[in-house]
Amino acid sequence: MTQINLPFEVGHTIEARSFELGFRGAWFRCKITKIFNKGRALFYDLEYLDFTEEGIHTTKVFQKRQGEDETTLMVRPIRPRHQSEVLDEEEEEEEVVVVNGVWKVGDLVDWWKDDCYWSGTVQEVREEDESAKIELLPEPYGEGKSYDAVFKDLRPSLEWSLEDGWIVPFSKDGEKRQCAKLMKLPNEGAEETREEEKVKPTKKLVGDEEDLALNIMESESIEAAVMDLEEIVVRIEWIKGMLSLNSENSTWIYQDYHPSSQCDR
Image (cartoon, rainbow, N blue to C red; front, side, top):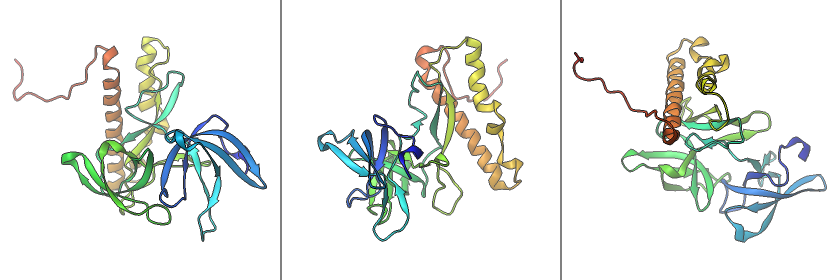
């Protein structure tokens, strides 16, 4: 596979992984400074943005683990933003990650530690102090050890390929659960009329037939209905998040509704 098949250019910020002992299963933020070939192999010169003292590293873009025949792509784009992050004003639309409630045992996560993200699985959840025990990917794909991590340092693991783009993998606990959703959201900073501001988000969230496709339409199982309810909860959480982000520039304030014990007269 040659560079023409990949969407990366010199100057792009990407994420790169390593098979080096001690860093297996970790993703690093990098900037491409050079693209070149040696023989039939493709290489990138990378500047590690969180390890500036390390200088430029040359990385073979497609590598094989020792003893394996399968080739692994060592780079990917910068992952979509989390729902709480502000969108770039120059972008009209962007895919964002929306977490489905709280973490659960079996969820696949990335843990921010030592200026890089380590992929692993949630083994235990402690909501009282907002922390979790996670186990890194097993050898030879990761370092395979367990650690304590706080919620704020965790993000959902995502997978990327040329064919499918970004996807959220299913949790590996025997359940068909995804700990997050990928959603296309409009750019709130774009110039538009007040009426367009009202209509556009509505169309994005509930107007497209593809977005409205319910699992229950294809299957009448309880599992399908539960997945539809989770999708609705995710959309409500996104709306609450956007109201919070825009609260400084708006007279609207989100408040949870609590019905009174008796009717007003």
